[in-house]
Image 1 (cartoon, rainbow, N blue to C red):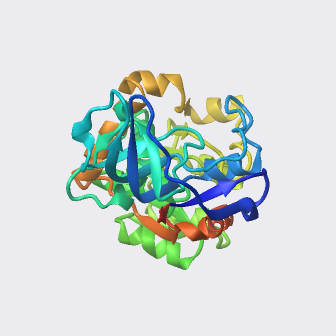
Image 2: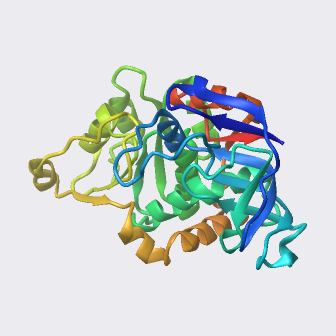
Length: 326
């Protein structure tokens, strides 16, 4: 089978497109014929050897990839044989071997692919979608909210725009460049602004005609996150779940006191307890996608160009969720 292998940590150039024997499912495992493999920004960090925090670097050589969708073609010992032939989607865990034509997965982690979703949409939902559901669930979104969404053309941002629209709230999507702004607008954002333009914050506020954002969904941080914080109405809420800009949004106690702001960091144990663990989040995300309330936008790359997919993701040249097609 065709597979992406990595023998050293470094730039995207370390990802090699090679041939390998099919993996053999072990006890409680299945073999999946992969139709789509998800690519996450964390994959690029793992590849570079800079995971840090609670995530140890994987052993080398390895096959990257944490999420796949496809069809079960074989089961291992003590795995339910009725899975064979079923379309499934599954999160494999850190550096789980997803960048391949076939991948081994734990049978207990499988979800049947909902009808109406493509493999690309399903694989985007199992990882990025579960994060979106968790963030939104901790945000207490109401129809009265004005939601500020940085990186609104990204994998999470496109889902947030759709969910905000479904909730009847007002969305302000921030994106970099005219094409991304147009995508955000096409998804139903009430206001779509290019944060590369001068005075973009003032333009966004002017478009709201006197209203101010009440909720900031901040996974970007840096200067954009800080500007978003300063746009919030008194009593606004900040939900923080990352900093793709390289550093978290800077805020002080006085920011919170003066604006009567509520600040939440939502990833981690608190979110998992609310949904009964990762599987609960995955199930909820797949249900939202199947119902059409949060359908992932995907950008496809061939498996052979996994390095190109990583480069595009790192340079912010992508829209929606990046997916590899074997």
